[in-house]
Picture 1 (tube, one colour):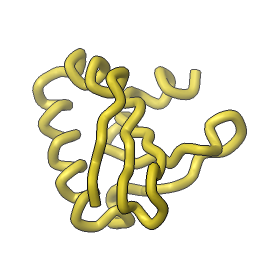
Picture 2 (picture 1 turned 60 degrees about the vertical axis):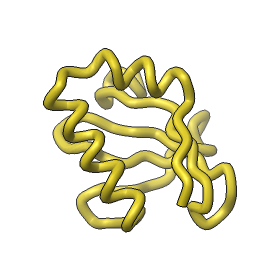
Picture 3 (picture 1 turned 90 degrees about the vertical axis):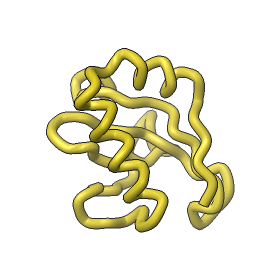
Length: 88
């Protein structure tokens, strides 16, 4: 699996507190090894965001991504934030 990051994702990541950044990095390592690990709560989004999937970084922190190549060969993370920031 190859992981790419949209510039908006990178900007949002940089604004997180250090502990949140560490959680995200740990989640990304797990995602790379096992994208459907139970703790990630990986699921497709609906409605206007139906082209994306979401994973959890614990607490209220979510990461959105899409598959650039099917079967998680290449994924692009596009957004990171709390539930209210991403859906509100």
